[in-house]
Length: 261
Image (cartoon, rainbow, N blue to C red):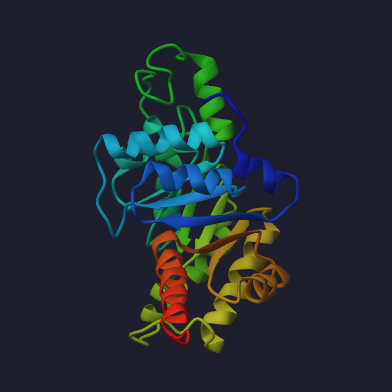
């Protein structure tokens, strides 16, 4: 667990970090993502439910394959942030941040005193089950583990400059689906001018404070990735593993069935 955070290292080197979202809660999927050369995998714990030993097994798979596991949790519960880090998350992502105060609360929940109020215990996977306690564990946690928020509603955009100035906040993931909903579209309108303008404003505010912005993309992978990298995004999330699996299998099956008999 003392290895360098791969996601952080890539960003600090000025490179583009690449990852994916995992919805299956499969430890094997985490290993595959790591061995594929991805830098991070976002494990969604907002729209799905995983609060048992399965999450810790995914963290073990991440440590084995060298990928940074990013766990997304709901806002308003600092204990979820602490539990994610204790379980072995290299990064946390908190959804639906609406203002500066909520973003600050996320950072406070993520850091040990005096920077925050995270509870100290090394009796967990991240603490080596009691073998990595004390100042070294606190320093490692506060400097290597990453703290992120979702930018996904119209309300928060006006607060972004102040939010990205928060010490200890490392990145944000822009959520075009919920941002579209906040504009009243009732469905994802990622390419709508208002959504695209919000992405640009987010990137500009983050760059001012040397923070990273990421976004999820679909096919064609390279074309869409280039668009957002040119816009200033620092990390790219390639779809969802189950969606990718469905697309590949559906395409293969259709192609085979279309063969002449």
